[in-house]
Length: 182
Image (cartoon, helix red, strand yellow):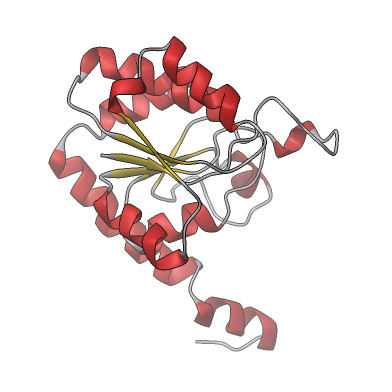
């Protein structure tokens, strides 16, 4: 079960800023290639963002309609239910930043496929973080193949929760604001 809660923004940039690109088209292309390898998948997307219609057309073009479930925007508790259902989650794989969508996955111990190059380049965290970094369709496909093994997914899940606790929790923010040593 695959879940991507990231809004669809890969073609239309209302503010003209292409750095907002979420790379949803790359996620869809990578999922289509992975489906050739594993027919037993279920994909969950949320109908959110400027490019939902284009994303649905891509899913049709790549033959993913029969395994894709589209959800209307929902309250937070329902969103968390989709995370809990998932075996793997996505945040953006485009040129934007990892955000709350990815952080929720890490906190809940879900393997996360996302482009984390910006946070690594800016020194926010190292490339040893348990994030399955991908920034193109082939990378998405390769990461999905990599976590096809349950033991690998469980290991990444454990490390994701540890990472989130150490680097993303509220105590981390408080320590940085108040410069507290812990």
